[in-house]
Image (cartoon, rainbow, N blue to C red):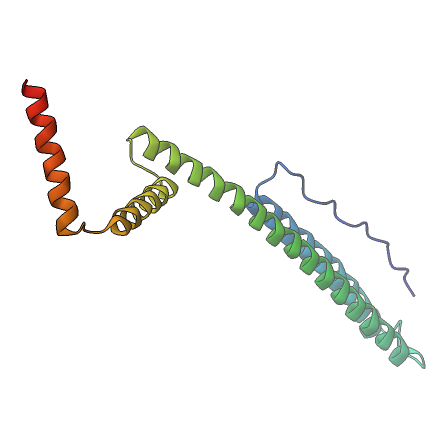
Length: 162
């Protein structure tokens, strides 16, 4: 029976490569590994067809081959899932970076146009609400207090004229 070659794990994606490049390389790796498994299967089938593998152990050899192919399929699926997980993490990280850059650009643009930010508007609204409460707290003065205030104002005006 042929010995199975050990395959090396594919290297992790470098930080400078684009997401599309990483995905393309992962897909190409999966296709290569499946091609190797398919070639091995074809070799085994030809061996059986040519009569070299027929005999008492033919069924066992086919079961062994099926087991090896199932194991290889699971390994490739795990590797693909792992790479897709890494890809998803990278997309989230880069998405957050892009979002922050866009937010900063919008803030700078609004500042250049002298348009207040949401925080500035909230602060002004809070100040207006505080002033409104203070004015409402003073309330209307009584009629007697208004007359006394009017008399004081009249006295000040007459004193200023002299």
